[in-house]
Length: 176
Image 1: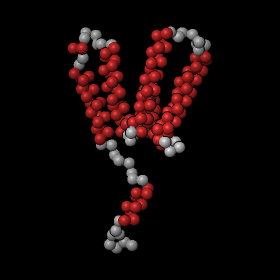
Image 2: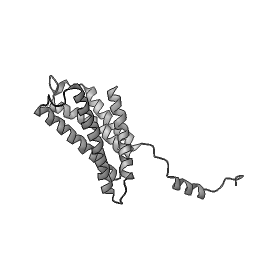
Image 3: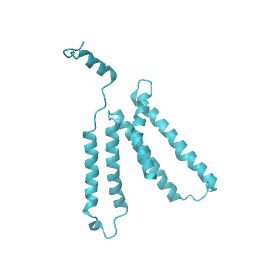
Image 4: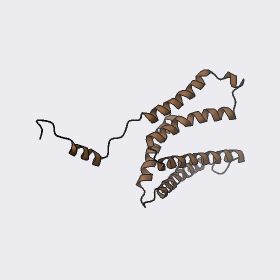
């Protein structure tokens, strides 16, 4: 159930982020990306700092149980997550559309995760024990990302373009 919460949240993330970026004013698209990223940071602070601190305080565990190793790895995780979010904004700035950018991200991330996890924690019995289905799954994930990226349905034309096309279209016989 929690995994589905993540799927839905991250599934709409790119669209919301792109909408935020394109809704920023000031004329400078680079500054608009930075403004959007600033508000992502504020949202992370509210969601990932204040909410857990409140829950830990309710349990009486807000200021104990921290280890240098746990804090270090958690900080690294937050940094790479923020770098990834910034990369999404940069991809949008380079002309990427949310459906394409996020398809690449969500097809590529599981592949990177699987390979990186194996490098950090090699399988018991060695690399030779990995079943071919694992490699097939990686291939299919990459292929799925490519297919979704290349064959994503095009959005409808903007209202101005539709109006121009309908104004230019000749009327059919028997119609005014």
